[in-house]
Length: 237
Image (cartoon, rainbow, N blue to C red):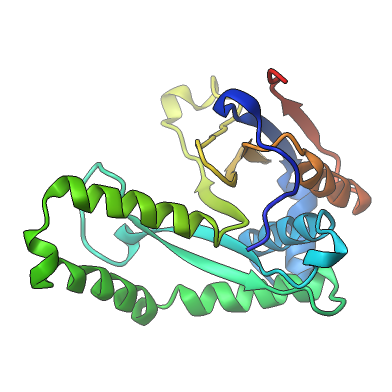
């Protein structure tokens, strides 16, 4: 998958961006395209990444990875993370509008989110646990293999997009909550989505010194007349 060009930030730093978007302004754009808000934002991230791609890498796939809450598919009361990932990929081998890309994104996302597909993925993971040679390996070897597998998987991801949904605090404190924001440590671009009180917040984590992808997303939104606010942390160069 394509990754933003340029160097990573020194000292394993991450830079954080918080993009505030009025839901009353972006929801009509998603509805006009006939897609969910997640698909519209995902397509916008793809477009922002595409604008960063040099010509020699124009045919490299852009892959958006999205965590899926498995509690919606399996009964569970655990407080631990319980999720899997689905991927939506597009190759910009020809011109495509944002609206058409959003529709394609929505179709691929819905196809991946079927109960049959999610169950198939989980069954494949479970099958590995019962392979006799795997069971006899010491834990430290398994941990090394998992870490190596994670690095290989990271290379196949351009950006992670996690929609945390509409936030609903208890009524007793709702009047004191101005907004919600979320960030995640990652070796790739990582964007969360949270909605509260008419505000859609994108919490973006970036390990790259190149900030063009975030800039492209912001400019893409403002070009459509969306009034946004952006905050960013400073980093040590």
